[in-house]
Image 1 (tube, rainbow, N blue to C red):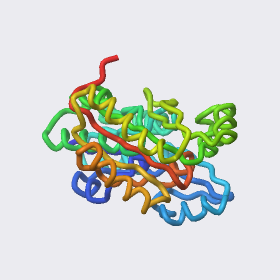
Image 2: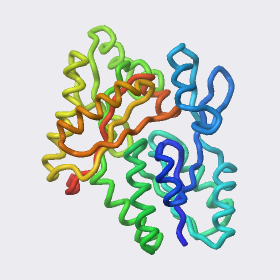
Image 3: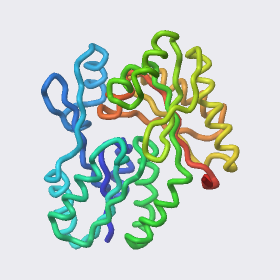
Image 4: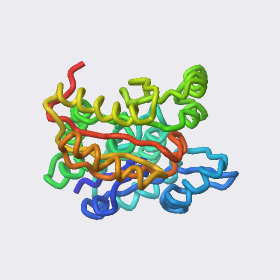
Length: 283
């Protein structure tokens, strides 16, 4: 059998993990010098409470040893592995997975750089799990997921750009201009890295602009197959926005809460929309 491995930044619902028996390797957050495995040693609620209090946060990838401890038992049971992870432009997690594969000296592991994170990564992991259940080979799954990149997208609206600036995801000039003029940046994942999509002058317009940006883009690709609204410490706001987005786009939207690692870069309050289009984007 082929088993799917991913990392904690996919933030998969528990029912999906159980349904497909997906193995999850956690990333780490370090808060005031103490290291935690996200969603193992620290919950989302605990993390966002500390972030709101201004605690210093750093993030780090899993170690090679972390991956070996997950890979080895799966291989020993006679399985093969497709391991799909957060973009290599955002984290060194893919490198750690490849190091574990090399250490084990096996040709039964395929490591995939998803060029994504969060709900975008989750969709790719779920698709790989569905294909594995249908008996597809590792090569077939890898090829399908590579093509799937052109169907899966994520747009985000951080309410405080300072967190992205601290994490080195935007330059200081953008952050300074935003703070001075109180602008809102709509960003998106572009080939694995965070890029600016739109600048808006008010929060209300930014929220509406996020929905409209998704609609304009998805309409060019014949609409949306599935989607989800992403949020962090702002659970109540996220649920309200999910309902509004669902009504605006006329597509059921899943609630997708982001945990500590990505939350540390986006801040305690942000919104996002992840979606899969009917047609693929042609560059």
